[in-house]
Amino acid sequence: MKTTPTTKILAIGTINPGFEQSQVFAVLPEEVRETVDLYLDGKIEQWYSLPGGKRGVAFIINVTEPAAAHEMLEKLPLGKAHMMSFELIPLGPLNPLRFLQGMQPKP
Picture 1 (tube, rainbow, N blue to C red):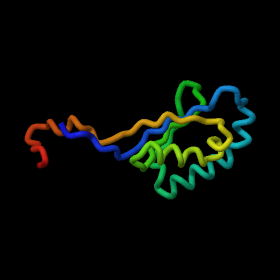
Picture 2: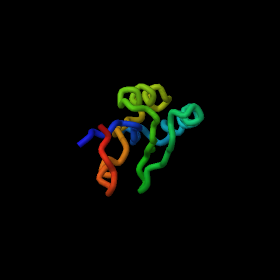
Picture 3: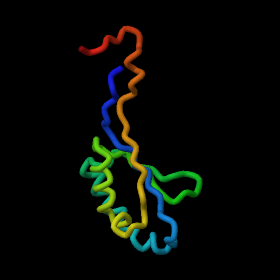
């Protein structure tokens, strides 16, 4: 079976333990501005809040290497302040679609 290429990175960011809400809120305006810039530059494709009272976000990032996503996210204000950490999950096309009837493997 052909391996699935990484085409995006799912980044799940949570606030690190030990930081008060007021500390995070003090950095948040600049964090939002810089996140909007990444969106407008096409680097962040989608962004979401984590449900259930969790303090964090989920981004779909338009890079193919986790190291590139990590570098980009660490430059954001919450990353610089060590207030947020990200779990980075490579994503790619849904490989089982190759099994659809009539699909022929590429040489």
